[in-house]
Image (cartoon, rainbow, N blue to C red; front, side, top):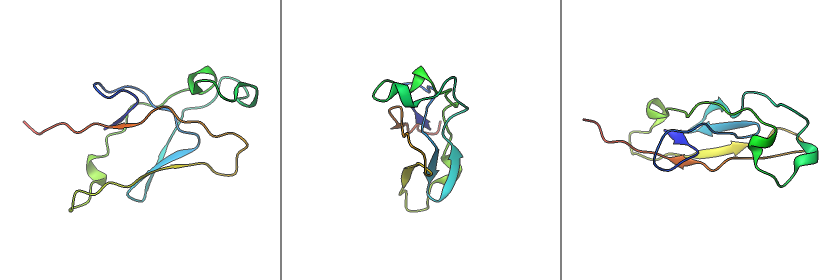
Amino acid sequence: MLSSLPDTNAPIIVDDSIVVNGRHYNGFAGVTTDPRPFLGQNPEVCYKPVNPIDITSDLRIDGMVFIDALDIGGAVFCCSRLYLRIEPKP
């Protein structure tokens, strides 16, 4: 799981998207206001988060995980903290 907290599944924000081993995910669910006046502040000020992302199906056979935060031509980039949470199978 990709989460904004290390010990539990919490919503995340990445403007514009997250790429995990080549697969694109939406990084946020919209904005509540123009983010440009809020540069340097927490992204929660103006971005709506998305739920934690289960990347289990994106894992490679060798266990490698490549995670990119991708911004597409915008004037603003922001990102909440991202943690890769690995939970052992029961």
